Length: 103
Figure (cartoon, rainbow, N blue to C red):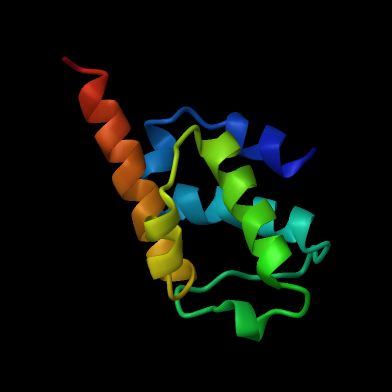
């Protein structure tokens, strides 16, 4: 199962919780970084992970946008300091998206 298939198996509402976001994000990171043993933690940064360079960062962001069906601005991505902040941003986007769908 690819990372995209893994996250797409979760409904958006369930994916709005931190454990579900970490689960989907972990699958994406493991797939793109080709490291099935990679474990994400909130304080993890690019400098902690072999192969997480600027090109890989772009690939990760694009895969996350596609899998979680959200969009990030360049400034939002530039402000991210670690995986925990990325998870928080994803959750805020998912909640914002679900709020707009209720109107």
